[in-house]
Amino acid sequence: MNALKKFLGIIWMLLGPIIIIFLFMQASEKIGLAAEGIARTNTTLQWSIIILIFIPICAGLVIFGYYGWKGEYEKLPGSSAEI
Image 1 (cartoon, one colour):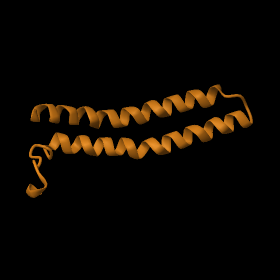
Image 2: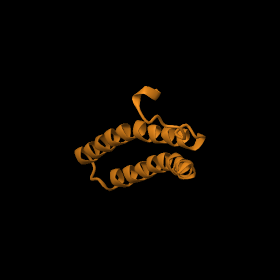
Image 3: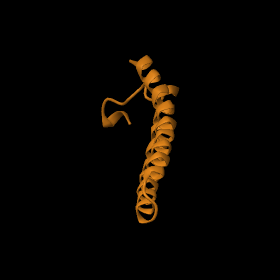
């Protein structure tokens, strides 16, 4: 089980930056396809909000993966008395 946690930690650390890169690629594509004027402004605003929301989520995913990879989750308490 600990090997699985370490493997998934690596996956999560890789997944965070991949998601951000994918979002930037999608944003540039969708903004480029939008019509000039208000439509492009609205599309840019929407994608800016989406990216700003997902950056901390992906950063948390990378941190969570780092702790999994380092083995911080190998000994989990079974009850609140063990904390």
